[in-house]
Image (tube, rainbow, N blue to C red; front, top):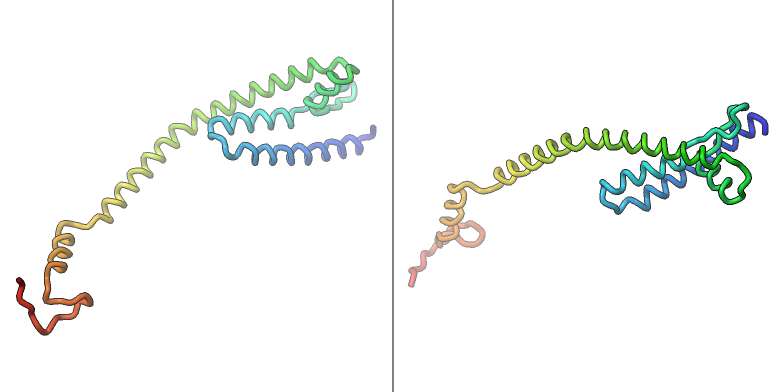
Length: 159
């Protein structure tokens, strides 16, 4: 395999992996956020983790593909190394995600509290004052004006 073939194979795999990742993002879109995000991280790690195939030539291949091919065809002894690479990168990615989520959580709580305060202030501003309510009631009780707000020429006695 020449260098160009190697790079072309990695480019094709990268495009296919990103397509699979996009499909996974669409499939997990309906889930609860705290379940959806770690699943997306795990699938990204599974699809994008390389492992070394030939240490002499510094050739890498996708760890999932190496593990699957070694287990199905029983041709090599790289399955354990690929599985260990997957496990190590998965743990690193999940720890980084937990740190990110731990930093994001208090910030989001503050933003939600601010948003709730703004919403409460907005609804309080929209409520009519007592003077406006009394003015509306007085306008409704006044029979000197018709439905259009015009003054009636004749005043009917109340019975």
